[in-house]
Length: 414
Image (tube, rainbow, N blue to C red; front, side, top):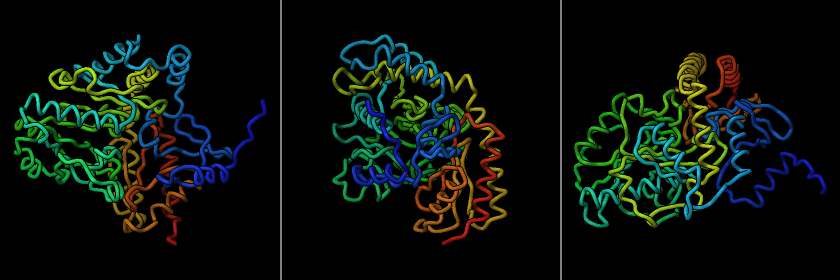
């Protein structure tokens, strides 16, 4: 067998440009290896990872316990489909239910699939349990939401990048302001509303954190109007914000919990919808499913990935380091007129650049951060999201804050 010739960064980027769809705009770096909080490019340069694959690698890159489980299970059984039982599915379902406190779980693969599952569940529950007239169910969503990019999900989006030229869209959604309880109550008064679908912190939109008490009050309004409280914790959950779930800050338990990303520690696509029997039991055989959903490999990896979160106290670490990060960024804001504001919880944070959304300032800062050994990515033009793996320690965080400070203070707009 002829040894494969090592690819250069330029070759890798050119191959993607020529043979891949242009549906992403990556930073100009080609990564080859990851370990813990670090990523390495094809030339061997080391970087601190401050994106964590959009919070999918909360446990750090290639966590040895997760990879060991992946290899062990992959050598025995990877996929059966749900045409048959496996020795891992029921065990994992029980594990998830006890871990998050629900009666039932429905495992899927991607976050978008989990949200599609939640939509179907909410609608069927509305027809069977709330007696909404057939085909008239409404799900209330909020502006700036991001739940995925399937055609059903973008039917509730207010982002023109997600919606332009992709219609016609699915009916059955009402869009209101985020963090506005008066608008929420007005919407829920419609007897055909079956669900309120929301992120506890809007991650992709730029880490928008609602006012204290918003989620708890929203939960009470949902109870008042017999509406399912559907919380998308795909990016905020699994310890990212300094609690196991971002909704834990307000002591609420959603009727439907939507999870993904870090459920597998970045090793495999796994997502899940959690609910109690009254909701989940509306589904009957054949009405929903996935060939890969709940496969043995996914189940094994998920249980180890969540064990790592608990055993290594990663939620507590995210809470402590998040406070340190925001303190350092607030200090930097006083030194630089480039920074407009800082927001976030735990290790899900954003620095808003003092420029328009149409400017390339945030992008150019991220390119310079890359040159200085730290990988981050802008969102919505002038917002830089900072979300490192939760296995980072205080010394590494101080080093990263020093890189960000030096980059910002020495940055010159083009």
